[in-house]
Image (cartoon, rainbow, N blue to C red; front, side, top):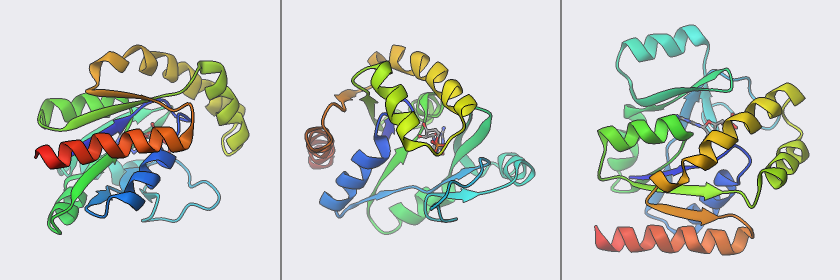
Length: 183
Ligand code: 5GP
């Protein structure tokens, strides 16, 4: 199992998309979230969108491998989603924030963790504002969390600086290829 973490806006999603295109035996787990759907997002594709009540019920049922609160919303990885992917013989990649990455490290110590680092916090702020999908208040909350996340980069097996998308994608692909060959 691969765990990709790093600040919101660091480019995790873009790099993972690139890796999925190049590595057919890899699939991304679709998480559950309580946050509002952004324009263009589709339920069941980017996330399974749910109410806080539904999310809490899944927590009570023990449905999650891990779950965390991020910038006022809840996010979690379903065990059933992992079973579905691994049942097809593929490796799973998770795109999750720091607390979730720490939880996965505890329950699945054999997992391989990758931290995607933005070139700078200034660049991160620019990317989040360019994305223009979140309210300014939300962006500020994400930047505040980003400082804590960048400070934790040394906890990860691999750190990839996302200075250029193509170069960083190639680095992620080679990390995953090497680990899959070793497994
Ligand atoms: P966004 O709201 O921008 O889609 O995601 C916010 C943060 O939540 C990102 O860092 C994203 O990687 C993380 N995230 C997405 N899904 C999960 C999940 O299932 N578990 C955890 N712990 N974090 C997640």
